[in-house]
Amino acid sequence: MNALELRAALALASVYVLRMMGLFMVMPVLAVAAMDYPDYSPLLVGLAVGGYGLTQATLQIPMGMMSDKWGRKPVILLGLAVFALGSFVAANADSMAMMIVGRILQGAGAIAGAIMALATDVSRESQRAKVLAIIGIAIGFSFYLAVILGPLIANSYGLTGVFGITGILAILCMPLVKWVVPNGVQLSSGDTLPQKDQLKRLIFSSQLWRLNISVMILHMMITLLFVQLPVTLLNFDMTLDSHWTVYLPILGASIVGLIVMMGAARGRTPKSLLVTGVVLMGGAFLALSLEDHSWWWVCAAVVLFFTGFNYLEANFPALVSSIAPAGQKGTAMGLYASFQFFGAFLGGVISGLVTDIWSQELAYGIGAASTLLWLFIILGVKEVSRVKRVMMNAEFDSSNVSSIEAELLLVPGVLEVTLNSQNNAVYLKVDRDFDAVKARDVLSA
Image (cartoon, rainbow, N blue to C red; front, top):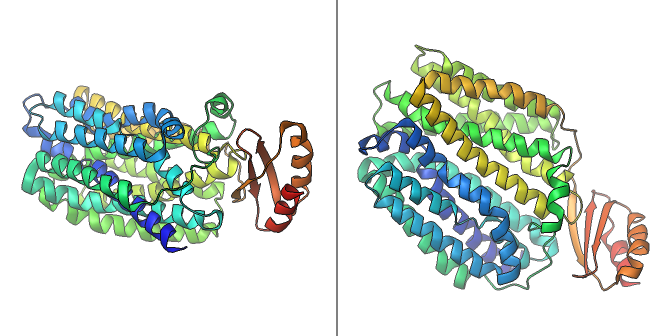
């Protein structure tokens, strides 16, 4: 990577870390800290934890499309401003109801697609994977950091401090986007952002819908866990400020488990390991649903949960990328993200409602039961080879699209071709044998 690409990657990764850390910090503390509000109830806690997911799911695709029309940076800055506003509304809330309003506003800053598109705009084709990888690592890092810092901040400053810091972090992201991230040439974004005319086809794709439902259940379960687990830890006389001492070793152990599973996968995504991830999460919830469990029992269950969660969270996007047609990855990932965030909302609602009416154990039990449906869905996912996506630019018109497609399919390593004559864009799915020189010769002929 050159200096501009490295600067863009680090700046956009920082934006992701600061923004996502603000979202995640609330999850391990809200169920306990919210007990001080006069209208506290488990249902309202569930809505507050998962509320951001509803607006994220609704606006993820529209805001991605808006960035094509208005430009990347204006949409990102708008999203950060809305997110900061929601954070300050929640920070100053004197009731659960007002906090939920703040969380819903936070979710309205749905800028994930626009950030990824900007990363694409400011990087060369040969270095794009590295830039996106840096951002991806930052997202994972933000989750682990937030889970540890959230309880410490909440203990000292309460939820007001957690949300206030979140709003400040969002504001600090704005100068990074405005002045540190370089301005790039806005590229055709079929493999980066959603396209309206592709939505219907991909919603009903026989393989993609299975992954969309899978990520919805995955995030339903992580939200359900964080509505319940902080309260479970209180049963062992653990104050909120000490919860990080549980999360830190648990996350460390789950990363070791993830490394073991990744090693067994050997660069692929075998169905057997997908099933293993689902079984680990279901077994963890089943263990937590049993009454009178010990502290060690809870810790072991949560390690199993995060081992499965980490593996599936890391591999589902790669499967979507491999399955999505050339030139349609942006739409596929937009749908995937919408289901992901809706799962967070669903988990909060289900967890809060079941706990409000019945019991915490039943909420865990519903999580365990949902994995039975999930297993049925995941068994229908076909194993696919990892592919690389390449976008090239060339001048052509609709009259010679068919002949160019036919010639490109003869180039070694080319698996799939999509041509967009309006944007002079060529989208390719390729394997390791791809001959880029021959592909360029075809396009320049």
